[in-house]
Length: 178
Image (spheres, rainbow, N blue to C red):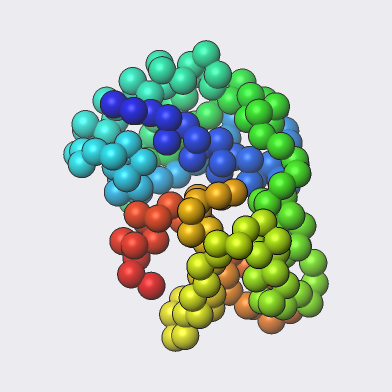
């Protein structure tokens, strides 16, 4: 099993959190539905099989992440509990500058417009895919066609004077059929 994509996703999720609220050397909990973990591991697994694979992942990633705890919640999501070592490793490995940092700084401002978000994407690439999402849960989809500098699909919503976003791996976005 190839665990690289799961490790990268965990690092990206924690990096986003650290950019938004700051770095702290503490345990971090990240929750996934089974389907997302199956996408990340590129395998169709049952819950029991997934628990076994996540235990193997924990051993595989231990030199960087330390012990990773695994919890299956009553609602069917799987919680991964990353150690303080993982929080510190991710903080040291991920830059505090670049596309995601710029995006978070931009949307943390008051009274920004969607055009400003679009402009930010276009500053980082000439290959931006944009889709207005009329009548959907989100107002705008943006992503980099070639996955560079960022492989995620970003769904934005204008909420009064603020813009919020959710980001998805491509397969999860496609599962939702927005």
